[in-house]
Length: 154
Image 1: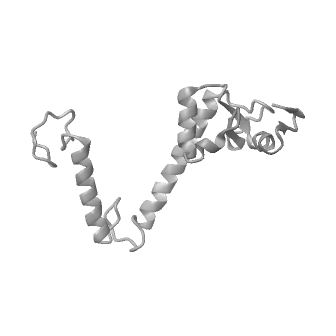
Image 2: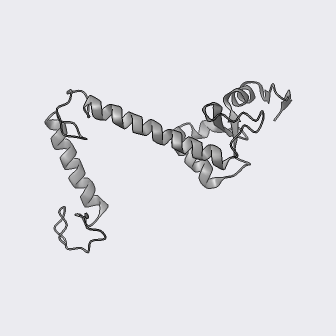
């Protein structure tokens, strides 16, 4: 098979493969994206879009909905891995649960988005670094150094 990006010969790993490497694939994707952007077309479906947006409103709503869904799935997986309830008060509703840095130090991870932090915590699964707390316990420990459920420093 001949690569559509650099004209080198390569062996396909699957039937749909058109490029020999990610660099060639990305180059084509950028070219296609820039062409659609210049023509005021949606990057997703190719239909007409508003000039200040990258996607049409329908595709943008779909993308946001899928991103929220994926974010919830990652959070629920993190919660499952870390026991499914707050370590302090046993709250078990996923909407209230959050990641807590045991020794503080959350500021060093502030440049990471939430999903990345959940993934790192799941990969390490280190109870001495991260734990699962509800937002009330997490906020109280952050502000006061203790949780009102226990009135002692954790």
